[in-house]
Length: 374
Image 1 (spheres, rainbow, N blue to C red):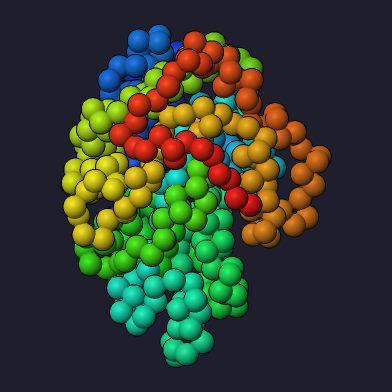
Image 2: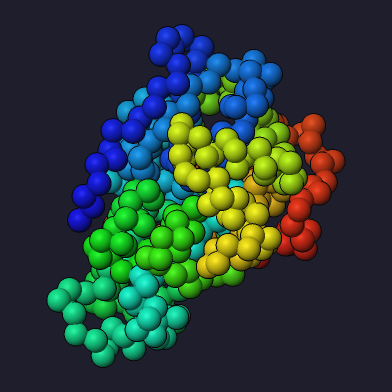
């Protein structure tokens, strides 16, 4: 399906790696901003850390490199921590998170062809499925089975009675291939993080129909995932890693911090895209770009109710995994406890000095009332 060869994008920033160097993997998306900002502004160095950032093409690569110990930490979908612990589609690797990187940040887009055929929501999509004659079923892309994109897409489809496998196909693609595959006609829609919804819109290939901030406000999105062995052996470094990343996230809730992130993320080492695309996403609701994401709460990077890895958020994920049929035959009670994967104690330790922090985001502060829907 995907014809563009992007599977050799591992970027080694630091050719002479020492034993002290920590390798952090990331996928080029807007929500890698806390890690990118912490690295490029020297926050990691200020906390005494040597960091090597590894740019990866997609979540399968992050998953495999975490499983085989090639990464110490990763920017990863929150559900990936569970898949790694239970060995779902990969060699089992005990891992955990003490810090969630962001909330929201995703959108559902369809092809211009579908939109012009009258598809504007799940109900009109259901009508199109019933009435049109196509050579193949409609196909939607998601970045990973265990990503929130998959769960949000299923949640969006369910009320209209659209059943994956019967009415549509869902395939897994790296985020960077979504727009090009939509343009090529290989897929008919996708749910993905930014800036790839905005990119499809700018190129005239796609139309955004729903934003995750509206579908499931304040849902957990990405996590700073580490191997359990890393936490056991390098606890102090792990705490420093969380602290530095959290400081960058706080900066991202200021206008100046987001302006800095726009410039950093547009560099080739990260997204390598026009800064106006990234700006329209990070400043959603303020951008005048036609068809761009619009919710002022589209990206939320810093607030205790966003970054704290709680059992409630873990249970939200487990509920969606079950609804997606991903836990059939999996004895979740035989593996680690939820509190062993979502380590709220590590969050508390790393952010104790910041407990009095009150964000002054460019966003409406009312968005910080958490609303996690099953």
